[in-house]
Length: 507
Ligand SMILES: Cc1cc2nc3c(=O)[nH]c(=O)nc-3n(C[C@H](O)[C@H](O)[C@H](O)COP(=O)(O)OP(=O)(O)OC[C@H]3O[C@@H](n4cnc5c(N)ncnc54)[C@H](O)[C@@H]3O)c2cc1C
Image (cartoon, rainbow, N blue to C red; front, side, top):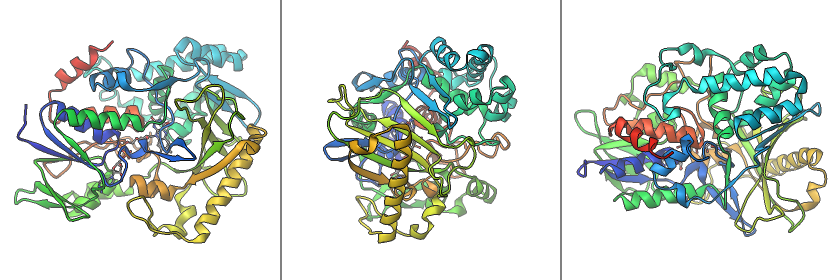
């Protein structure tokens, strides 16, 4: 136990909260500083029309009994209090291509194969090959399987990092529609042809095959439960604390961090839950090696999104327990981000689940890709609950246009939806930039690229001896990815064997 040592965590995203909780459980005095009014980062929700809307997380995988996230959440003592709804066993995701081909992703490998074979009866062997390959790639990542070591692993077999998803799948089947059906849930990781590695697809798809769930009344319950556990372990999460600077001692260690309200927090260690680029900016680039700063600043980030949130008239749209990935172009996995006449070329549609949800959906969220550059004219404006700035009328008009275009697309795949909409709300890449502080509102931070595997790897240690990193840029993004990243961060402080042995107990 290290009850004397104080750790400041900057940011209350899932990565910051999980790192903070593990360390609080091990006797460190943990303070999490969050700039927003609401904790959770991309787990934040908002409420309109007496309905709760998720802003980021719509469903999470790996939560069936004995699976990776189930075990970690059990270890963190939050699993039993989570209110979740398991998605449709036979179709947690439904991919609908522009040519009318439709495919379902089922929970459990047997079901995953069976559902795909129904859509691709002439490619049964290919489906099996693809499913086997997804499983195989997951075995190379020990921590993902709650192990510290494994016989085969990506450290010794770096070649598994260098395989492109689209490219690899195209060697496993000649049927391009089958490739698209597998990669259709690409918005989960902002998949790009010629860039996204196959291991990213494998780790993410596998996690959803191993138990996909929605969160009743939103994902913010994860953040609230983690905050409660941090408090029970002697720590605290403070809101409206935007860290803006750091004080260093003569040895080059951070001694305290300063918030925008002038408050100062002393520390023995700091963990930053921010994007590495933001971390360098905040702590001063003179404290980092130039080569590191240049590399991090040059790394491309994943695309941003435009979201519409639809509050529905009562009892009009039957609740659907699946997510829909709809494509309006044959050219999927290319850069369909720009606001052309055809925008949006892809929509992700998910129904929100609340305690009252029975036969009918109360609200749905729709996500489209949108390049931040389309909002360049308004990039200098900032608006959050804490910073009440204003934006020009043109910005609101652009949002309205995007809402209309998205609704038109939705109408193509959910005929009659427009008449069921009571209220419509939306958020843009600028909203995400302001609320979560990812560069240009990027959804998932640094884009993994199989052509440059080393460049996109971010270590939890930095050149500042007592400053560490956590969050979606460490291992991979998503609730599962950032949680595993938080384990890695915590291993700088606690005995990794002990933690892993404890997590493994929850079968
Ligand atoms: C639109 C969208 C949809 C998504 N859908 C899913 C999904 O369905 N399933 C899934 O698993 N994942 C999904 N994700 C990804 C997932 O939400 C993220 O990968 C994950 O939540 C990121 O966690 P993080 O720990 O990196 O922190 P973040 O969530 O990025 O949080 C960082 C925190 O730091 C705070 N902060 C920033 N600067 C400061 C400062 N100077 N001082 C104090 N605090 C600061 C921010 O306010 C924020 O709270 C989605 C993301 C988006 C954007």
